[in-house]
Image: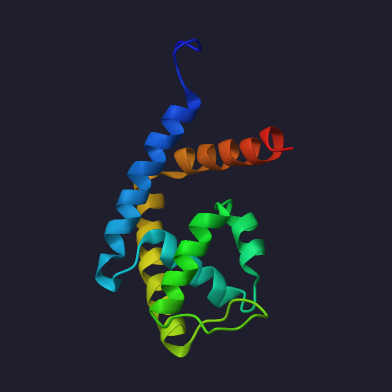
Length: 134
């Protein structure tokens, strides 16, 4: 590998597109994107979380977060509560279905990649998040 021509950011973006496409395909039956499913699952796990806190935790731009949250309100998955984000009953049921889909796909991807690749990805993400963002 030539360090002068190997672009880490370009490679990460390409891999992110491939992985996102795979996960998006898994959620088409629920008519949600992987990003929306992720938000539903996070809100389900942390009822009342503030939109700004969720945006920061997930490293999602505020404008993108606002678009998805507005769509989730429109679809009846979120309550209109100023004290934080809460799922409706329909949203909770959808979050549970999404979690099942995610869990099955994630196990398959882990098995296909193998522990060495998964450990490498973990090491890379920890390095990026702690060293480059500090």
